[in-house]
Image 1 (tube, helix red, strand yellow):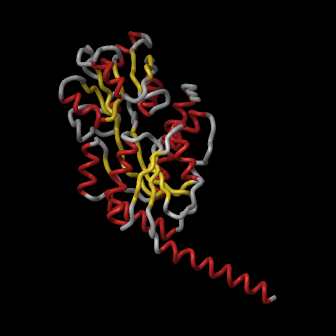
Image 2 (cartoon, helix red, strand yellow):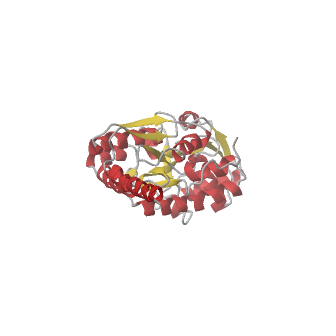
Length: 320
């Protein structure tokens, strides 16, 4: 009897200690895993957030790149990490898309993570060579129909977000394109400027300098509203009703993150994403800094999954 009572008391004390430890968080460096290569959009965003979050938390916040398998290697690493707030993930639509693309699921995106907040929303812009005769999206689509699937579209690789944006346009309009896959968008831009391909969906940040120099021409952006960085460029939705392709980034942690840690991390991320310096830095990247509640971010990711997984399946797109 005494032994049983002692064990119950011991378990109770251990339980009470968990919130106390969580409320002390963080007491050591915090790691944000970027599941894509250094220098890319996810990595750059993670480093902007890490620098400002470090100032707010009073502990070092470091970024570690764990790449491969369409971000699934880094995502699985975080899913299996201890839920103590010291291992976080800067994620994107790849969280839901990659299992569908690769035909395997090393994690359950709805159950294996704690959602913290969205971080940034980045629309793409459809860019063409200045010699392209089509001046509007309607003219562009009509030309594509006449070319019968021969109009060439550069992508950042099969299954990349820029590729999926093109597939969504195909499926919404019935127009076919010939995808030309590159390792990243930069080589495609070189070929586009040289007239080797006819168009490409591109993050606004990397397209802006080329648009300003007249080396490319913008036909439409992929947000539902016109982009502040390109206010005179129409949206695809003005020609293809309801069309939207937003490259969403956000912060998540392993499942079962203690409530006190989630609350403190959420509060700190609200401070980070409302900092004018961070907002300006994101503006320079053609992205919108946006804080959300954990539940709102989860719902946004569910909407992303409901949008892109059917596109992947309808295109019978499979990666190895």
